[in-house]
Length: 399
Image (cartoon, rainbow, N blue to C red; front, side):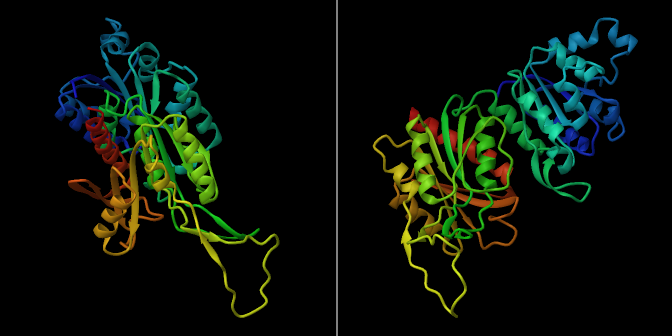
């Protein structure tokens, strides 16, 4: 990636400590870095820390007579090739979304013509607040602004959920992705989550899939410049920024909506959904009453969305997922060959703390003639690496 002039805005929050590592990584990658801190950020990390890491003076005040003698905020705004605000607090997001310019950072954001990446970091309740989400939607509608994250997981306050600032390595990856990748401008269709196969109006057959891996991949693909359609079974996750989400319920719904999305144009199809292999032969019209000690349920096979898409005459580059509990490599590679996939991502869902319903994962990617393992790591970080790898392979096929 070509060296760029990065202006890093740091706002108040415990995640500000991660920004020091981000500066180090940006410098190591060959970028020039300057830092602007808000008053709140200074309560968590000193300007001297960022000055030592960046090798540049740190700006903290709009009303600094010496710096503003030469209209310093305009100079900063013109200097930057890219502005990144990390962490971006709920307060900063609110002020920025409304176009305020009441401190140095918001003033530079108003004055710059460079792309602006906002990396949220806050408590999960603050992130989920309706007013915060309204402000995020305003930023997502701004063609100059991208929202990167947030991540999910344990937070400093003890809560668990969305709101964690992305790790510095992920931010660096997104910066790289935004500089042009094999996925830029591509149409990507991703399936995620479980399906539910009804037994009667109140019961169904399903599985433990949370959809987190598929949603992380959708975010990573969007960040890499792709147009993304996410065909999702029932989950409790927020829609990834900039991604078109189409909700489905059953395996038959999944096939129908995925096929429609591919018909509309698709360069890359990724099937992370845990689609039920079987469904009840008959769905009772009324709730089945408990009337005996045993009950038999007749099941019939569901359509195979992944095999159907991969078997099309106009099949896109197709990547499957294999969740196994034993002999992972053998089952995964057999599935790849049987369904004629370009790649398959396999993981052992019996491993404690990984896979289903976890924020973390460990996978091995197989393709004809090679393989690579990733993790254990957060699903967000693995998604970034997977999309970079898939983009490389997609680029090779195009050549």
